[in-house]
Length: 408
Image: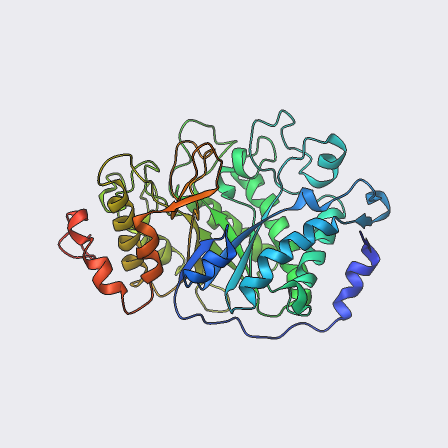
């Protein structure tokens, strides 16, 4: 355990920043990593790792004094995930999540004061009204800034998860879009400030699901918002408060998460008012970010695809369809140079993911996510970004019914 005083946090501005430039990997291949050794065999260049902020906080903290005692065993477990990847030159992106602990004393400090206390949601917004969030962001930004090679290196910092659908994924209670965007802008700005204290060129990302001009179906405007409107509101607020270099982490799942045929999405278009942005019309997001009011220092903000996967249907051609969807997605990304990473989700099928089987591996029978056997997608994924890709991908084109990968 260790203590971190808030006075010390802000004194960190006197420390030298790490000035290493943001890396330029050979390609976009990435994975939300479950098994580090296997991920290295797959030849990835990008990796997504979750961090649970509430798990870092301990009851020995004295938040009213700005004195925090952190969970060193959890920090060490994250080092063991991050270091083996970053020391191989893989860009690691940390997905910053505040899961409810269901301990009222901890949640009162770590979670947004407006969060619903019945726990009928997955992720809460972090508490930015006290010293916790600046302190914890300073802790992790300093630890994985590159100044401490023994801990590993983080280059991408994704604040929250699918925040436009905030009722489930960034819960702050009922909030209309203006308030939801404002609260999120505050959290992202605090994160950015902490990260810039220690790294000059690491990147901060906003996280969104695939809903573009509509909100998630079946809930109110106080529970979710269209991502397009959320991005525009966030950008305006950031400009008014002093703009900074934020970027986008998008989740372009097919319109139906249970159907891997991304090329066949029926209800999306290539217009800016399309309902969703999936792999089929991913250029809509890229084009929208070219608007003058969304630029930073005259440059377009960067995009990563930080969570998306394709269902394995329980039918004879199910694995071929999943692999064909990955090939289709990869080919689409090659036409969009502003996309820096394609981080696949999941490494292994997960039994508690609502019937979805998105993994490169099947999970073992009666397990949650223990690896059991490799799918067809595994071999294709391994070939992505290598000379063996072209032949392997093109064999799957007939599965899609398309004449070319670029067919609209």
